[in-house]
Image (cartoon, rainbow, N blue to C red; front, side, top):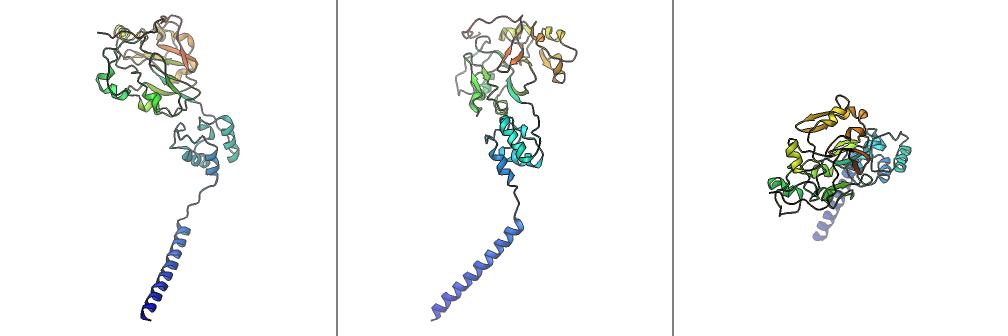
Length: 292
């Protein structure tokens, strides 16, 4: 009888404790409840769910929260097509906005057929690993190493290496996520608005003779494009032409015409910059020999 009474008391105690804890949890749930706007999930469903970061935010969920709060416009998701952007704007009753699309561009045109190497690299086949070993063995220490870290890291498949070991960006696939910018050990990639058509496809800062001896398409700082440009648009700094994009509306294709190496190009076709009329023709397809 005593044992039965003990068991009964224990059972009663556990029942009371269970009710007490349930009450505490119910109260905590009421006090700590955070309301979540159901539109967040609806907007997220209209996003590409790539979490690529092209919008400048942590991911699609974060973008959905910000667009509902009015901190960003639907068009800031440049990966989305116009139909989806319009659907988000209609759902929220806001203007879709107008955000210019950006693409990744490479400041190098020195493929194996035009740029010399001074040493063969034999090691882990990544640009970051090669760059640690005396800069990677390329004669131009600023140039692309061509081992494809950028292509590997690109989740959209927007970057492919051409037959000369040079990355080519497909603007239709590029989401401007910044991954290639971060992974390149030479800092050759940057994200550029598509309206910026004038581009210097070089980072070589050696003087003219040394630059051209290392790469046939290097900027030699001859100054011809600067002389042809409106004042302030182009300047020479550290043996390299620099573009002040505050003046980009004054840029025109003729600024590439007298460049002897074709280092400054014009992007009519976003996938391939066009060289000027005076640029030397490169007919060679085979890699240049090792430079001793």
